[in-house]
Image (cartoon, rainbow, N blue to C red; front, side, top):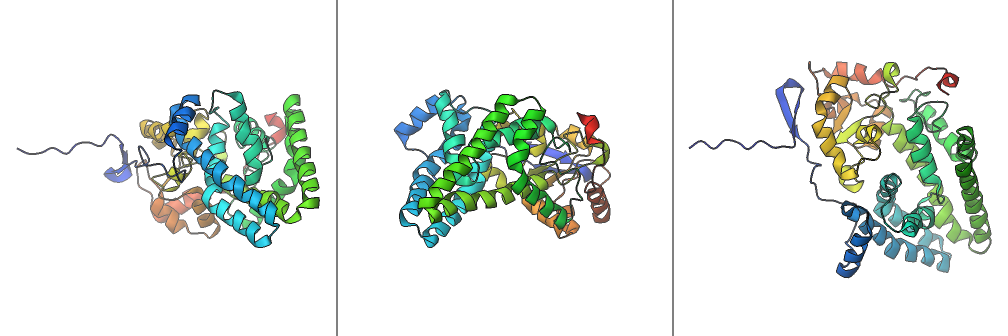
Length: 366
């Protein structure tokens, strides 16, 4: 008897009569180093609103038992060597993982107990360069509501020539020095007065607290709070720039044309499927485990929209490849969902057309 091949439910059709399998679905998670021990695991799992978020909890517990004691050691020793090692290890082990954990739990509360939902954004975030409570205002309330719209989204990439390194440096420096004033002012402009007050108090509290702390522990304060803040601002802006580097000027308000997805990339297993950024902008409340499944189920819509999808790259890879004009590499990794298949030269022209500034009268968008 002839054995018929079993169809893979996670396989999608792409241009040229080819198929690819979305390996992110059901992939082994790599967001944490070790699982919480059994009895604590059971208690924490029961305290969750959604048990699928246990990988986030494992990561947060990893940080509590590793990063906090290490930070205390930096203050106890006041050593630049210990401080640098603290930052270096924390950066490579946890920085990306924590930022993306916070990214998703800012949209959906993790715990049934309210105090636990506030503990990590306010107590742990400053160790990663995020003053307490600021991320939610910037990302959930501002970035997703304004959706990369220049004039309102303070991290909008629309006004820039996005393959120009100098435009990116201006973008970064403006964020580094301006966000402390622009973010509370944004909340005021939108009539979010309580949030504006909260942001102002958070900013003043962070800088006042670290100033007085630096009087007694200058080395510890620098390595635990100030240097991570500077580096985190750079990483956040390069990440957001890369995620919104390809914007179609003619359809810049469409989620299918203001960002892109990266699939089948190891980074998705470190970042709670953050590569499915178009999916996230379409529905920011969708659970992170559902993002690759939703992409699979709506791939025809992506093909109709001619939306950008890359395979086996991650966002910063894409951003750096654009800066270095490596369109040949981008063409090899572009998932061409609709026919006819573009040649490498056509792919380059297609991508370059989405790097130009979006011109609009921002005042009319009010």
